[in-house]
Length: 333
Image (cartoon, rainbow, N blue to C red; front, top):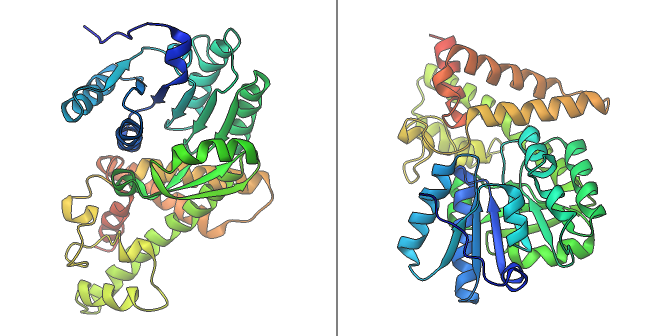
């Protein structure tokens, strides 16, 4: 039997309730930090969770209540229910189609907003999605009288767990200031990048760089081993030289290359940022590049490599994207 929402005075409950929609790898960690830190600030806070996979919501609730037995945390089945129950709503979804479903469908957010008092209602969408879709959805939400920002994140699952994410925010100054205290419960750096869609633009550009770097780090580490270099020695050289980057110093794809760290490669590439999600981000970047007449030759090349990685090795789709190294290694075998 699914947990049900305890309806008291909905007006009172909404004002002190926070909803989180989307409890995947990133969302579940973000929601945990947000809820636990909010609870520390205000013991009478109420929390709502919602996910397309009901078992994810049930598991999250069970785990959270095992740590905070007195917390008020309920599950709802639709985004509409979440909005009717909470003035603050955070969404963390896979991509554009899911955002359109959650916000625009019949049982979605915008439909609910048309029949309630939207004053003081704030939406934070941390999905990485198409900028045009994000701006359209935000515009429709704002027309109802609510506030909305796009706030994609950088820092991966590790940053989400540690509460050290960077949030790249797009929206009005007023909405940014309203959202900032909430984002600070989940992250360390909160950057206002500009108007609606600007946060996503910054995130997509950042991930374009990251996606290219991870490929070339894999290539360099393979070449170095062919030349007889110890992976730890080569990684140490790169990380203390001009080739240094996150893809090498934190997410190096070669086991034993970072003796003092445990990147995904040390766990058979489990955890981290999935290769399929990196391919999605590279698709977003290259499509936006084409739409804006901005040439991305390295981005296009890297996108094809991630695409081919998944085509040849479907088992790597859900592994950390540094597993592109495995595909590159097989190419040279």
